[in-house]
Length: 344
Image (cartoon, rainbow, N blue to C red):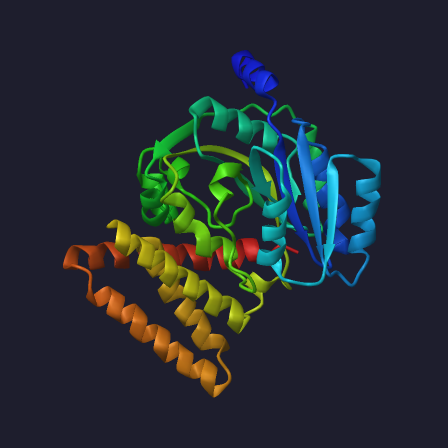
């Protein structure tokens, strides 16, 4: 970070809210919270929402809240991740906000880096990259990384993030296009820093697994500028028991509904929903694998018809573009599943 940028941050010193929904995360929570409180940018408020945990999570949260005035603990009956995040949004006081899952880790440089490039570029949102780490190795990898002298690279700002989100999602495409990796916008809301004003009238759908994906297009069409850096400043723990890895019917159904919701917004804005269409085809295949009851089996046919109807409305060139992008991404996903998701 340049001396000029350091001066800007020091002068403005805005409060950054960090929202962490907590549910039965006692095995990972201590490391998660410690990584957040170790941020080199110290003007933060950490909002922990204990979402009806039945393990020691609440006790762990309370211990940190007692020791550090920047920690705010909210206890509630279980309402799900979307509800917990909404509670955090309702109570935050920061000018900027980011999210963290209760089993992941944040590099100590994450807030500093994302805030500096957001202010420097005058963006609505900033984003970094992440590391996929196995549960057993996560804390040791984090400890080694935090001792390193991190040299920040380039950060690129761009407009029309909704179009970039839909167009640039295949790894092959990102490599082939100049600055393509910078234009890639991940789907989770972690690893991102938002202007708090973006959430003034937006809340996540509740009791939905893919609440962040559902809101993706709604938020991107409102943004004028996004800035991305390529430093991996978020540690995404890979667990075989997590919902995204478990073959859960409801998860894949929710993902499909989010994809159709985003595609509808694309249609209204004249954007080709390449990414959402890929998600539709991919999640329909997953739904076929996990559907067991007659109702679930019937739902697969329902989604297949909706998907085909959407494809039917596209022109020939659009269809070719969609199929090429989906084909590349499918191959990449298979490689990913054979490598990253096998981490212990």
